[in-house]
Image 1: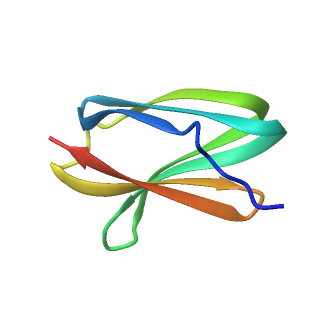
Image 2: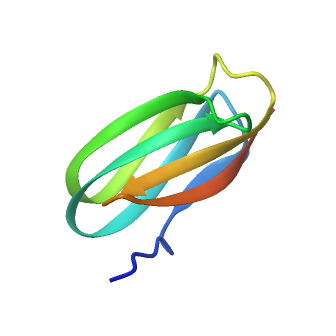
Amino acid sequence: EELTLESLDIYPNPAFGWVNVNYNLPENTSSVISVISLTGEILYQLDIDSKDRVEESIPLFDFSAGIYLVEIEIDKQKFYRRLSIK
C-alpha cells in the first residue's frame, strides 16, 4: 500500500531560526525527519517514536542561508519537501 503525506506541513518556509514539521501517519508508526543539504549531507536527524500525529520544531540556528531538503522516512518510503532558510 502506497503511503501519501498529504497532511505534511512545513512552516514557515522560508524559515529562520526554527521550522515546524507536522504530519499524520496512518497508524502508530515510527518515522525519521532529516534535513539534508543539496549535496546530500545529512545535517539534522530526528527519530520519532511510534505515533499517529507528528508535530516537531527543528532548530535551524547553525544552518547557512540556502535551499535544503526535508526528508520524512516512513516504513522505508521517503518523502521530500524543499526548505528555504533565510
